[in-house]
Length: 284
Image (tube, rainbow, N blue to C red; front, side, top):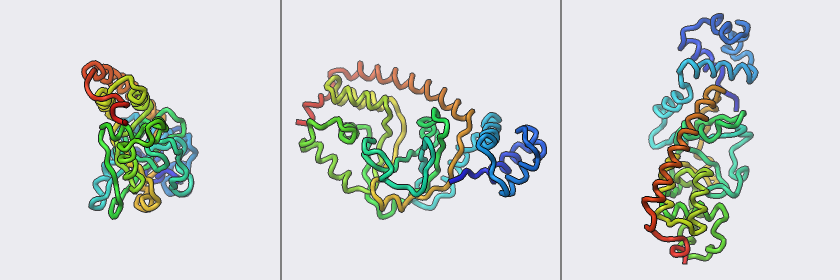
């Protein structure tokens, strides 16, 4: 799926009140290149695409965020706007089988509920981009998790960390409904979260400490589509280009956010020390 460069080029140019000739000079290209791109007669090289969106971002127009808001305004009733962060882009049709089995909830198509949260996960990859997606939950069975013990155990299970407890009644009570669902709504877990969950699984901290440490990271919610039926209920609205400047912006923001989350996590360990239960007390 290509980028919407034809419409965006005209939109950016008109927003900043630049003629085709003025914009061409700003980008260091011939006027005919701008004309042909706006007419859809040619598709620019990736270097020029980056220049166009880079100019926009440096000038203060957060185009992708604006698109997210506009698509939300135009959604049909009960539909949900989601974002899919991709390191290399989606090739062909969306398929559950293309994903890894050791993700948060196993194989599935993973989306977030926020553009900014999604782009922060892939801003370090050179070919990364974001897809805006329309999801219609009608006639689908969904399961929702909060930051709680059940969610932590589900993540640990699908990550292969609970082999010793696979026959636990509580664990089976959590996993069975997931296998019968079409999609899952749950807090997003990143590598830092997995490290915290690992300390809980290893018996170093209690479930109460773990929950509050994880809540401190505040990464937003994810939608995980785990049935073929659910895939039929999502539509890609647009493939958004993330320019070099935008990636650098979110890299810096991510570093600051990680520092804040790390400090909150340390405080939570101290504040909730001795409260809650250890893993062997829960999965007996």
